[in-house]
Image: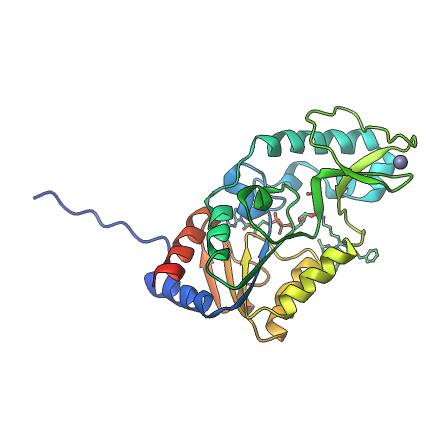
Amino acid sequence: MADLIMSEPLIPEPLLQQAASLLRSGRRLAVLTGAGISAESGIPTFRGAAGLWKSFRPGELATPGAFEANPGLVWEWYDWRRSLIKEAKPNAGHESLVKLEQHVPTLTVITQNVDGLHRQAGSASVLEVHGSIWRVQCTKCRGEWEDCRVPIPCPPRCECGGIVRPGVVWFGEALPMDVWHSAEAAVSSCDVMLVVGTSAIVYPAAGLVPLAREMSARVIEVNTKQTAMSHSVDVALTGPAAEILPLLVEQCIHC
Ligand code: BJW
Ligand code: ZN
């Protein structure tokens, strides 16, 4: 008889059970996501060995001062990222959150990502706290609109004559106030928080994790690595989000 080859499960069964039972106990879920959830859709993360910040300096690309100094360079970088994101599709991680939402009374996705993949996957309640790469803003009249054209090789001009910038939040800029207040409200009232694919070092978004703890919510983290928040969560599941989230959600729904 052929030998039966038993492969190691991605997550030890008791740990997966523990996380699934926490998730099942939740009535109000808040999910904080970062670049890691889109990694398996082919979108690079910021930090880490293959992250964007290995090849590009944040100070030269992701600050208002950088855009003022060299709008062409900054726009070119965003145009390149828009072209990558345009080709990307939501993965099984994004899709699992859509499935989960159908089995819990309230689920709010709070994402630091600007790629729009949660909405594309079909999540009903998405708060984009760092804006969207598909929105643009005039630096003169402050008008904002959607522009999904790719490529746009040079920074476009608004009809007022102002130079147009990406509608994302750069270092040193305030987050969109209404979106941020909704994120804080969702976290303050949640009983379970899922933190997926974020290094949790960029504030104020990272502060949502301690806020959830202060409000006595249980926290589950999904990440390929240990993070700044791993020590303070109830369960840390280590592995790719596109593999772990489907397992976790199936276990939560069917047990
Ligand atoms: C996987 C995986 C897989 C990989 N599966 N997991 C000290 C204390 C507090 C704050 C500050 C401070 N010093 C400076 C600040 C302020 C600053 C900040 O936090 N800096 C820190 C770096 C220290 N914050 C700001 O400036 C913010 N604004 C602000 O504070 O305003 C104050 C103000 C108030 C009133 C008026 C005016 C001002 C704004 C922050 C904006 C961040 N912007 C960016 C760019 C957005 C646009 C764009 O996309 O280009 O947002 S930076 C970048 O980092 C991007 C991300 O959203 C953000 C977070 O990154 P994320 O998502 O966590 O990605 P990574 O790459 O860091 O991590 C990926 C993770 O996934 C890793 O853990 C991997 O292991 C994991 N992973 N594959 C699961 N398959
Ligand atoms: Zn304008």
